[in-house]
Length: 174
Image (cartoon, rainbow, N blue to C red):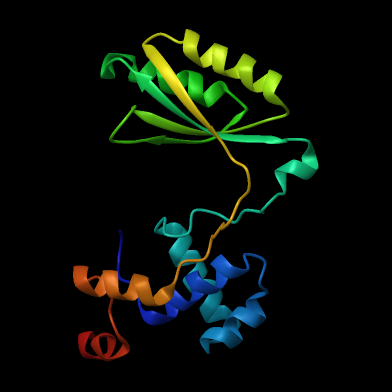
């Protein structure tokens, strides 16, 4: 992570996680700064890669994706990693891919229209070089989806790592 964060940066991040479309004027009011100051901080947070982008949340079922599933994939060795990732990047049904420990090597979050399209999709995955097998869990309902990062938890974590600075420290560094 480049640079240091302060409590205002954390409040900005927390506020945007709750509402990525918040107006700069509202955000400035929440954190107690001017609009130009908030804009400058947002630019810094993006430039440093802390804020990667702003996204929307979609109800996939209303768009005809009735099946959501998590597919655990077992790949036989790391020599197939590059090929596996190339396949993953081409598949539009794969919404997220995680490299994991434990049973299997990767977990894929998948959206598809129905069980027949999921079956075709799983057949494709199982034909990729190095794939030994898959294990699929269907999502029945989503109980929690959270894009908001709690500023208090981040503050504690960053203080432990000594990368969070307070306003008193800023003044003493000048």
